[in-house]
Length: 133
Image (cartoon, rainbow, N blue to C red):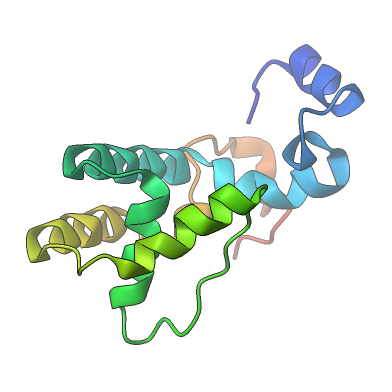
């Protein structure tokens, strides 16, 4: 997602994490599209307005959706795991907040495949090499 080629090459040589590595970066790039970043920013704003961390908003949203049968969580500490599990002791999200979350989702239902950096010379390929019909 870095338009500066020199900086992009530097990140490949000195990755900050798995999303900067060439092997992962080509597949995980889709989560850093402009649409995905916009959605994440909007979700974070909703969480802040509701007085909760974004992680709590996400986990409580998952819990309230009948068709979501599991939520994959990645933690780096026991404290983070305990914090995530404590979310499930809280009540349901307010209906108006659920609606606002849905509105963010409806703006772009597949943000991982959206990108506003599409060049005329791409000739049937997207940013990560996926075929475009």
